[in-house]
Length: 194
Image (tube, rainbow, N blue to C red; front, side):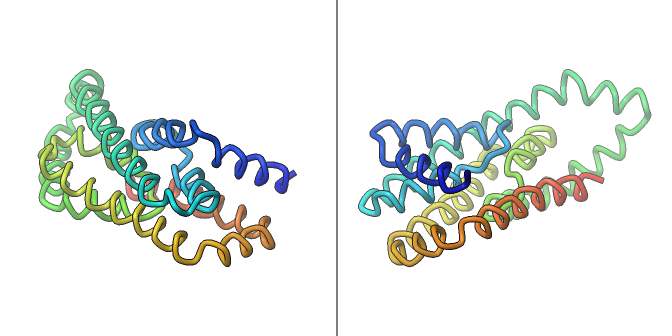
């Protein structure tokens, strides 16, 4: 079953409209969708290494734009939902302290989350909730997402055939590792939020 899914993903990655699909997934992942765009970026670069830089560029741009959608979600939901609840329970001052801490370290938080498997949408929404400077958010997002996606594309461009062979020969291990990273990112987000 994994082999069929892998073969199908590789065929889809080589299609003309794959870049558009990657853009949509990358945008949504930064605000609401749980599947990271790497799940498409990797097979797309492996399917056509000549397009590695274009693929990384689309992934970066749409991820940052999706990050601003997440930022707006956090900003809008804070005003409409979270702020009245915090006030009702008398936690407005605690949140103010959290917001100050987050905004002091916000650029580093966004940069760290954008580079790692940590769910980026958690940080984009938190940035909106805390009112992190949009300029700080934009610069950190462009740097983090650009470094991550261009580094992946560069490694796949340079070492594509051996990486493809490794994935194809150890597909079960690769899928398990990817699943562990995805779940680990959500567990880390939950632990950080406590």
